[in-house]
Image (cartoon, rainbow, N blue to C red; front, side, top):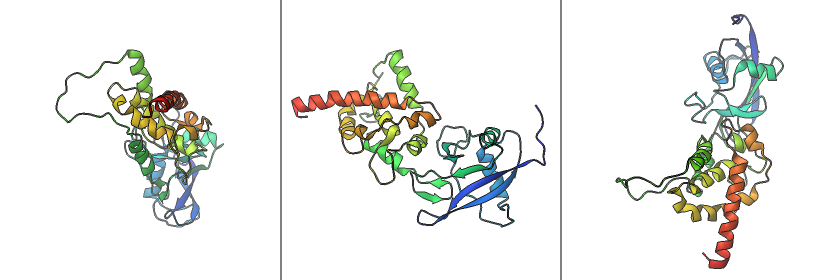
Length: 259
């Protein structure tokens, strides 16, 4: 492997904002090339050297991150115009995308900006509460062995279980906006995931009632942007489609039984 030139540098443009009600503005920074660089390491360099290309000393850029291993989902931002995880976004690939630069970093647009690249993703967790995204248990004592599942069902649910609530799917979704009630692919897929769990399906009716209401499955426009940007390659549109079929059965039962 050829060692990087220590004098080689590239430009990074960061969209900054001091708060949700404050105007956004751009600042540009020069960053030296280093081996194995990702966007997080770039932001760490800028934090240690917060001087713009025009020589102005500024406050360090604010962003969110946790595991740095594409597991926690906290470091999502819009990089070169696409929602993705900044811990797994590698500088050489980004520079190639941008034909040598600059690399652009922006906060997600579908969530309130706390500051700079850091947004408030609370709505995603609130939506998980709406769809009862959990397995119910009767107390915390040992209940013995749980129900068994087929390997095929385990494999299907495992693919959906990889969701890390990062928000990439919602940022890319044209139906998900700040001022509507759409649950989005993430919450709908998790509702289907727990509906298919042998214990989780005890809350299936309640989940389907939510998915039938405002912001539910019928609000999905099937743009399929979500599967294009999901860093875990979760079959989101398949999960939404299967949740829709569950809703059809649920609606017919409600029509004839009234419950």
